[in-house]
Length: 504
Image 1 (tube, rainbow, N blue to C red):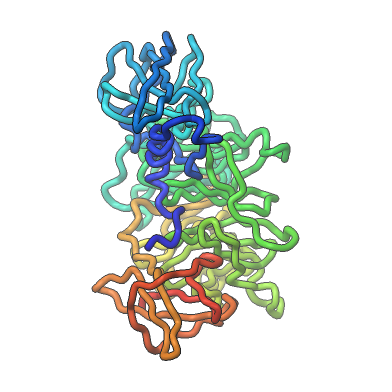
Image 2 (image 1 turned 90 degrees about the vertical axis):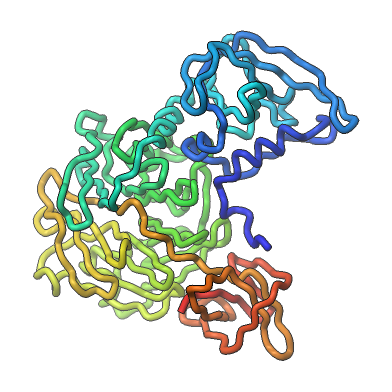
């Protein structure tokens, strides 16, 4: 049984389009309803059969009948300019769309040029308003992203990092060797430079700049702005992204002086998650574990988790300490069992269990590398080691340590024109499965549960009454069985509380 319909973004564009194209009879439908959220350019192009640009030279209305219903379609003939995905097309090609917005048809205009995401065989290409088909004037950033998605990944994992002055994005081997600039932004406008978070996915890299989110291929080619935030959103001031995360075909980011988490939608944006209560501080570093998002909120001295599209939960509250503990969580990383974050105020790396219990200073930078004014920012886990960036001009750089804090080392020194800001490592290591309870039922003799198990893992099932940190307790007796479920606040739940599964 599927407990959430938001985990697999790779199906959204195709399913939304097919559903729209096969609706028969506009009288049966009051308005077009697309599956949400839509995909970004890279995965949208991957799911389309053909992506091309062209000018409309004719539009013909035809009437068809199916299952006893009559419906109209428009056959739109294009003069093809460029093909970005699929086989080479003839100089002219016909694309079919439903006639009318209620049936998810796309409204083409004679003589206008478009970027078309088409589905089906070349002899019967189709599109609709639920695809990323759009005016060519607004599709320029899509073209850059599509071209970027065709670049190849490095053969071995590499460190990628942005810098404080934003002029270059650098790439290096995991041991710090082979350092080179992979994206040159030195001639770009200051507002477009890469000073903030960076994230890589199979179809490209994305980073935050003062006026939006930019994208390039994995080899640094085809740089273009993916999300324009120069004019602000919904009447608000222009946003400056801080944390940037590409995960499950989606783009998520945090912004300076904003309390929400944002996600991409057709080149614009919408609020993704907002914790309850008045705004305090603002989210900065982002990380994901399966379908769960985590973020650090330094101003509130807290770390939040949100099962995707569910109400956020504060899993770590650091504001209740004695004043000598953690002050400002900034960058965040997550494993199957642990949270890890940087603290530039305390010059340290901290860790805690996923539920926020057992907060521990893992690495005191002053103790390990000598007394200085450190400024750790972005952090990532890869291959059983931590990697983090430090922006201080004199003692900063790129660092690494084992997950237990041992074997700390400086991999790359900082300099005036090369002060690492945020970093990531790509390609990712083989992902540790995110285990979820999928079914449960409580009986007088115990609780029956089922989860997405693997034969090479052992598990424990935990229960919490209220999701508070430290409240998760192991259930001693577990029997697997497929039963009906309840989905509450991102967890499987019953009247007694919440359930989750963790690898031992």
